[in-house]
Length: 228
Image (cartoon, rainbow, N blue to C red; front, side):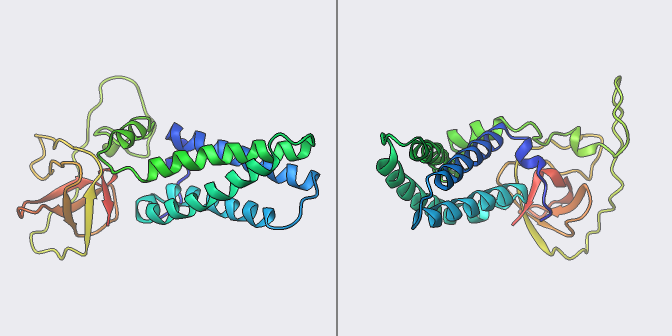
């Protein structure tokens, strides 16, 4: 999927944890240079950099759910390594080494939070809290907006122009990310229940032709669906 930094910027949880991780990494990196450290610490630092970049890319491409268990494993290893770094340098009289320990504390906090977050199922209390913080969470109005300017006043929704074909080939499967109530004025729209699986004809455009498990055919807003 295309890179979309808005998925990070639109969720304060991801934005805050990635920012804290970056700050911790910079402090650890700068402290290690100032202290002229050598050896395995640099492997830890490079490993953590790639881990942070990987999390950023996975969130920005909306593929985190596919790799979350791999990230949990990598993060667990990182927690062990940087916990050892904290134990080695915390309390030493050298300011540079104290900076390395401080940066490692930031990194450990973020990694532990990520492990808890990534390891939680979609319907869990933690996941619901994180999703509730998303500023760009889809809604019915967003699903129908155009690229034109937004004006105040009464909103007149335009009915979609997708033609439903009963003989279409369904090439994809998608999962509903949120509940959605179909517009009663449009008989082609499908209501969605979070987590249900639908067959999809094409994954282009704002509205996708879909078929539900009971055979009902219609269209659904693409920003409520995730190709699986």
